[in-house]
Length: 448
Image 1 (cartoon, one colour):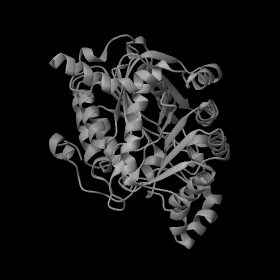
Image 2 (tube, rainbow, N blue to C red):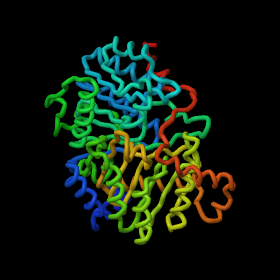
Image 3 (cartoon, helix red, strand yellow):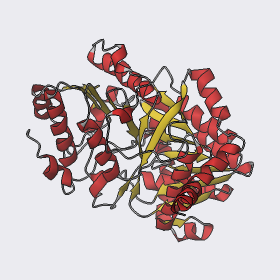
């Protein structure tokens, strides 16, 4: 009887994604476009684990970093100099002593826009401890020449076998929140399988460009080796499709794959047959993406959009409200998240595939910055994110014509007026300090 009940419970969890897989696949147009036009390689042997809280992401990441044996590669838009980054760099220093090669990249603008940036003294300390750490495109006078093409990716690859990517940088407010809007909500992912090699190639190529080095070799790409051989204590992928998930790494490189993110969003929206669910923090949109959303609505697709009622950019909420109102009038269902700042960047289409990562639906991400997303053609992963979407609706208000009229007139006017600023709205401005997390106490960093 116990075995029978166990099977019933597992089937209840798996049936939604198994049912979706049995029907027509809505992802073929997107996968075909990415393969044909950009040479994106899709592999079918992956495991994907989702993290919807900063605590879960950093617990898992710290556990994996602590078990590294050969290489740790990190590329982030921003390391905030707080308890999380200090604890992380302390572990990295210990791994260097164990013979692990540690390479770290961060973006110059991301660091400069941070209210607690990494200072030259911090970098000197890290390098003295044996880490290699470099800043991409440091800001130099006259500064305006550094405004475009920032590195907005978030990539970690450990021993070429485990990788992390998504929307989270390294900062304690992913756990503790921020005083001005409370909880900071986001989505991050851990990947195992051949997709790890694609993320490794992105990091190594960018590392060589920034540093002038020539890091290469087959030892960086262990291939079919199973990360579970020695990585223990990580959150498992318990889905029915674990180890069989189709994943493609979508990498935006200015002047090389400049329109890849924009075309992926548009192709996915045009291919949608039943439903599109979007969560994006800087929902200012470009004209062609907005038109693709309009076309989906006109075809009768159930377009559901979740945006944040609060933001870390003062102008952004007014523009987002205006965009959301315009789409609501055309037939989209729009929710405003009030449980904090929803920084997640995910799209689920027809319950069949997910597009998630670092890319915002604003001009910066779609036209200028280096970005990295995963196209996960797996209904189980998509179903998990859909469950998150439904749960988060309980912390939202639904935008209706009546609710729009309740917005103050001056607030609505600013949304109309600020539309002209949409090409210039910068994402991920850093806010005020918050209290330290348990990581600082747990790891006792031994550097200043």
